Length: 417
Image 1: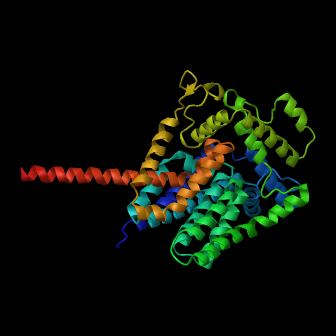
Image 2: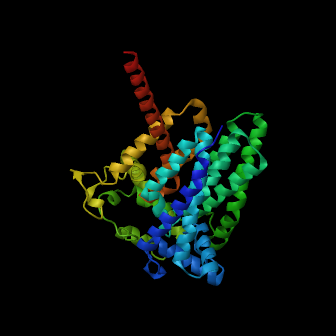
Image 3: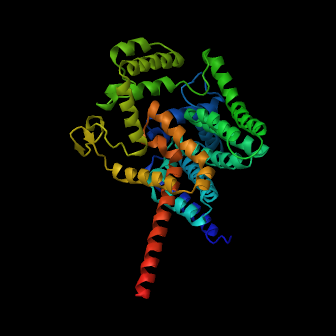
């Protein structure tokens, strides 16, 4: 096979680096004092880690992203510009492995390059490099993890299985939602692909063991500071409560402004205790009306993949177009076609290509199920949107090929006449 388009990949990666860095420098704060929301917490932990070499007793935040910020600060001083440069480089890393995954699955370099190009045209992808948030680090870690896992399913080896497990573990320490995927990944290596089943079970166990070895030290640390088993962070109950509290979807809620009875229960409690109380309260809401809980899951799914189509206008920060209570945000006009194209792309893949892409699909499904159950913001989809775009690129390539074939057939018929 003659590869004519591989040489264009470095140009695409350089362009991704330049575009994302230029946007971050011109549209994002350069002074840490101007950060907001979760970025403040991550920056605070990074500075504390750099100056005191400890996270203190905090358990609410996953540790990998503050550690990444602290590493950048240790080399360049407390500089958001340095963070943006490093994150633009992480974007290039994620796109590099996206190309490898796309080429492996489709065996077509033009489709792989098209996937990278479409990522460059999709603002939510390169905007992540300018956010002091976990999404860009998660994307850069999950991409090689998915690559090693994809190859390990068909051709397991010690290095590949260990690399997949270690990277999934780092991903879990970046975003705790990645942790359950370690079990999915291990099962996929163990139960699918050619070879002796017992040996494959050993390979799958190696993936899981490598992940556990990465996560376990932090879990032990959490137990020592909190007295409770907290595998990664104690924010699960908080997010589960937000995602299943009905007023969240019909009004504007100020963060940490809980209903008065609940607020009184939370006063003076530790992070772990707060998480437990919120989890129990969320479970109560789910049990009160399971059908309502299912409806909220659909809203969270829409927030992830459909541009919040159907959101209640009362919950929006700015007025959005709507038909009665059915919101139609402007971004849904872009996200809905992308999602439809991605579904079509998976359907259009051959059976053998789907087998090569099963790890990618498993990641997308696991990610979607977990966030739809817990709580979802649009940015939470960013680390895996690369693979949605890859599937859309497959659909686009197939449609173009079909149109060309029809045009050729039409031309041949015209000549025969």
